[in-house]
Length: 360
Image 1 (cartoon, rainbow, N blue to C red):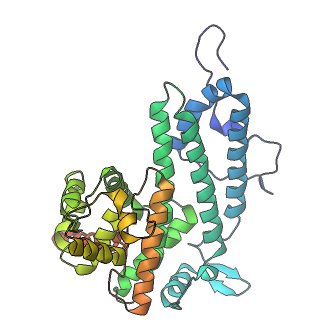
Image 2: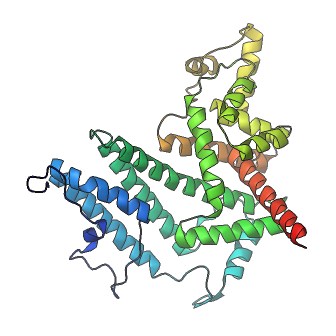
Image 3: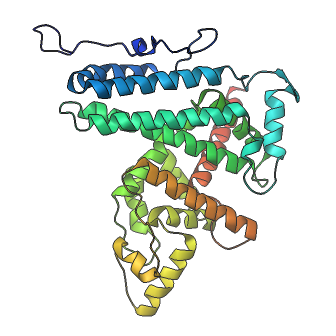
């Protein structure tokens, strides 16, 4: 809706969307599901959407109300960072951490996780899809290119929260890791599950996002399969933390193999097979679009431009790594993301120790 004669859209506070006739919670408490930045972003575009397409604006409003109701319902579950007397006994953050660390059965352990963790994850996915819908709609609105990009970034940030949760779970189950690190990752998980706002991930997510952005712009030639030029191109665009990771960990065969899987978008086994085929045929290099033909099966070697592509390829690499570890097969037993977050944890611990020593 436009102001009378002003030619400008009227300001609509996103909080007004939640003045709904629907019952939000029994005690009328409301939990903020949007950051101030996200609220301002939505406030900026909703008047224009309402002017252009009132039905679409109403649909967005309903979606936000639904998210709010879901968030308030989840908030009524006992916080994970507090002590509670439950039917099964007393639950504390320490007991939750112990449960995560000591439950080492093979396979999926979804049913071992707190209800609030699973419900919060569903809320995050719904929120991610909502931001993605805003992004898809606003990218066709002239003059809102910056807002559209911001919605895309918010969508990707949600996706990385899911990914970091998965990495924490992987690392917690790794008995070769120091127990203090595993407990630290478990505490980070509780923080993530209680708020889905991982402060530890703030050090990691921007780097992983930058690596992905650089990776998806590359068109590697599948020749030596070492990925040296591609790795250099990525590293040139990265910060000191990533460069330190490359310098210190690329000599580790597992890290190098995980990096190849990440760069080329195919499994360690397919990389070995393709390398063998090219050597036998005397072919120095092939393009990405030729990989499926040489391997004889369809493979998705490109990370694509969609955040869902990145997460899907991550889960494929994760599942392959878990299978190799369980069956004691050659190849990477962790993903590149696992190795990187482990590296960041070690660096932060060393920095903390150095700071403590300097003060003493």
